[in-house]
Length: 68
Image (cartoon, rainbow, N blue to C red; front, top):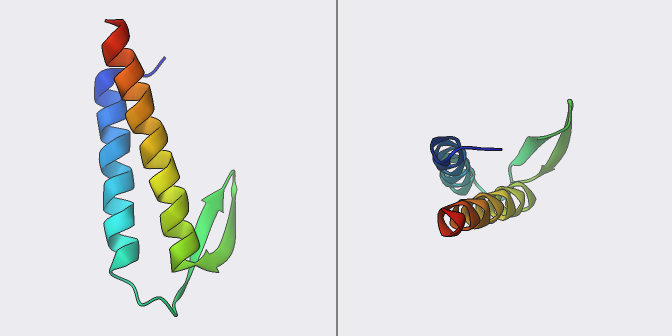
């Protein structure tokens, strides 16, 4: 089970990734890691995936805080 500090670090990592992706031009292609492989995708798709992961980490943190 993830600790509060682990979840906060994960959230910060996703926030930084989103900011970095938003700084890129939309015409740029990026590589997104899926498992042990990297797949070429658009900036928008990668940013959406990072946002979903950030939302998931926030929900986990909320559940962890409410159960304490």
